Length: 438
Image 1 (cartoon, rainbow, N blue to C red):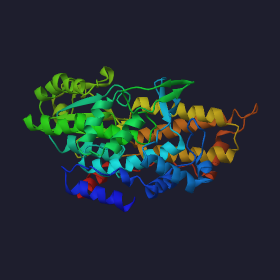
Image 2 (image 1 turned 180 degrees about the vertical axis):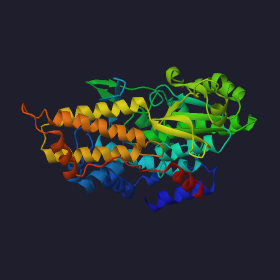
Image 3 (image 1 turned 45 degrees about the vertical axis):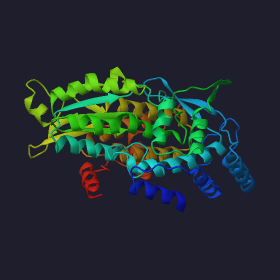
């Protein structure tokens, strides 16, 4: 990060009310070259089909032209290329792939906005932030439920959050700390650049395209001022008991001590607030449940309900010493999705050399353990491991008309390529202590 950006970040940390009026000049040749070096040249290309290698061939002149177009305000981003990827529910998720040069400017703009707004974000926001992630969010969930007076949980999901961000409202959020007209115009240019889908051009006054480099920071800014800050400044101070909000991208949960406060928030305050900022809840993914140590003790029949957050199903339980614990396991939908994806990969790539297949399987399993291998989830990752091996064995034996491997030969193959058995990668309670120390 350039010294200028670092200095902006330091000023933003020291003065929470400062408004930046002259920062556009920081998107200079030095910053653009830094962004060029950081970009991954193997990513998909935009509508102009220009790759990083092609841009590199005449890099000094390309950067000089880009700097000049930004200075003279003639720079105009091209429409992004829309592609679709399948979701676990059978639907398709759209991604916007920008031209390589536009990615450079987006990354530079992202660095400037992050320097200004990151110090203002709540510690309970975990999506798209450096040194914070899903495991830290899960640790916060564990802490707020086990160590505080949580008795009710609002499990919430915003319907089409990225597609429904109101551009005018977003610009109002930006203007709270940025009054540099040129920066605001640049943001507007990216929001209005539009997408090209099967030869048709589309532009909307709503949404930040998923896949855009600058989209995550814009989404976080909108989420913070629309929901998180509102909850912390206007909701919590008026409550009698404990309450917290934990957010990751468009997903969030809220913890409450008292039932009446949880119900009023769930039925009245939250829908009203989201309507004010042009958003709405996904009704099939939003609900209020009794959850926590008191819910566990007071449940007369069966166990308290569970809730899903970040791919894990959270449930009430107890430790070996009989103390209350919130535990988690891979959610059924995420478990099935991962198995379907693994099965499709094995089917489509069974003709690859065996060494390539086994090395890729090894990487896939390690990736699964690194995310899902957390405290209390050993049983789920073991189940995933054995189901994955069954799938792999099936498709390896369909590489030809003749059966390729017996069970004994398959076991030797696993040993030969050092296919990893399940292990716990993340201790949730270590993450809790680490967050306290910081």
